[in-house]
Length: 469
Image (cartoon, rainbow, N blue to C red; front, side):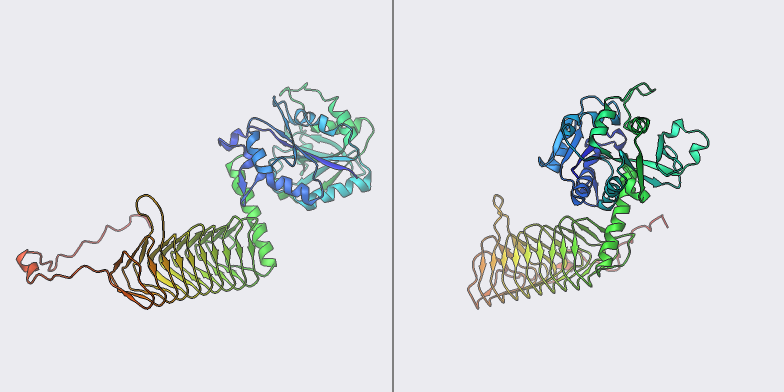
């Protein structure tokens, strides 16, 4: 069966209170409209047209030019939106899936279930419905004695008896394409809102003697996102689905209420994700890792057996069996190889660090190439910025750098060399050499007493206690 899709994405999204289209707002690291498109593609429907409005450029940036677009100049209701797709639909056999663009929860399974019902029942249309505990403000679905759809009644038009119905319309449909075009041509805007309603096509088809079926899906699958509260709710539901998918694949999630994982993230078996962790972008984590607590990784590749604790890393590669943190910052374009330790308050940026190197605390490594088995003493800084250009240094294998040392731009520290603690190194140090760059120490006897600088018992006062409990 030939299947295409029409997605309504022209709404202004005023309730979102945003300068951007509501359908490009992100849920679990992916724009809402991308979730809809992906669900269609996974179900086998790649012929898609998007009804867009004033912010169409944002939608095009997300979806690219592999789908069709139609601009809706006036916003005259859902039926009017689908009317804009008539040139796309004319001449097509088969069926058309019609979806709202603000429904990120719609799944491949729901779409496939509706398509199968369409084929099995030879219906003119199939309405995707759900059962709502609180159906207020939602259109109710009335059925006949055979279980087929009799009518879709908007909440404001419901009788007291109809208001008791809990089965609601999801605003998702499948139509026989030719019958939808026929019904669209007969829509009227004779209502209080002066708009064309897509739901009226259901009544038109039933009036023509056709049968309209329905499939009931999970209520969460029907959720639309119209404001910031609904965006938060959708994000929470999607995150829960993602976490449970990872747990089913052998990942241990310590607390699903505080761990957030984006949709594209991959995690290996037996890895533990601790509370407060956020995994974003195209992050890929190997097996037997421990990530967290309170760690954020954005598009990071992590090797097997690595531990990352209380740290932030983005757009970088971290090898296997590394120890990162606590309070480390690994910035973009960094590659850390295997068995490396990057400890407390260490920042690495645009650098390569080879196996078994250690920078355990209070170190900055920028724009540099670091060899194997290098030891960075506490307080070491690669001075990679000369005021105009950023140029790091080269540190070869087995170098030992004493604490509180500064290594200036472009300096080369040769293999197996040592740097004395407290040095500022301004020129190359040869292999097996010792680099010392200290000022001469001068002691002034009795200076404290002569300068009246005795501190005695002048203890510094504690800060005030916090008032909140």
